[in-house]
Image 1 (cartoon, rainbow, N blue to C red):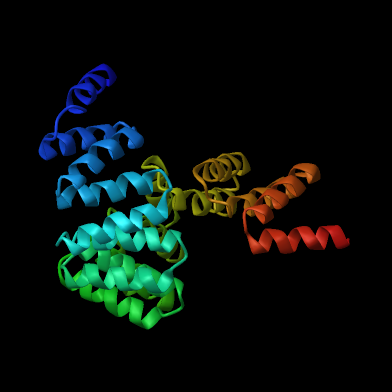
Image 2: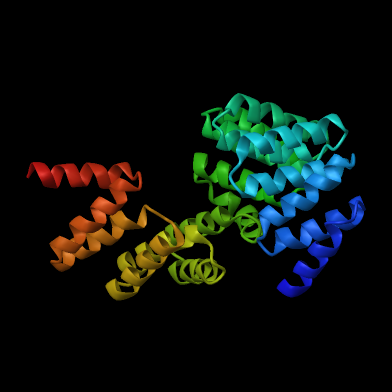
Length: 286
């Protein structure tokens, strides 16, 4: 595969065919060769291809060159490429320009991009605009977007803990991982712990990061299986869930491994978990 890409790249360096350059650039990007993909997309963009400008933005963003990616997306938008709105919003978020990101996501909504509209809902919620975020998500869900419908179910459950949302959470579990964990919470609270365990183990098997922490809690609190709980918390940490440090630390402390517990509290605090930081400070004071 690599030899074929290199051969095509050498051949196309003397070519000005935008379509061929874009095809090769996409294959290079799929192979993780974003610098080489950038070369292809840039040459096609220089030839006036608007799709190439959009792809160039993607290649630059993949290399962490955010400001250059913004320029490429804006060129694509000016040339009539509406798919660039959403990606522009994502890059502007990475740059910390939240107002600009919201404008970009609203542009995506106006262009009929449902996924871009959902990104707008997520950003609004992060900024504390929960009612507006829910309204946007409901609008996207009404347009037929299954992920948005799952998000709406989660946000409603978070606000109300209404067991009547069970069917909506079940329908959303395959589309939004938090719907699966909310469903498991509902099942545990209604005395269906075995099914809750099955739901969370399914999420863990699918690689859904958010399933590990509640799964570890279920193993420990419902089944008294600290060994399985520890494995779940450590798997969650490996998957990137920093909040698992706190729960693993408590488990280790209860087992008498105070040094291991302090280390986990410290790692959680360093990763931004305020509860772990608070616990660590109380230990230092003691």
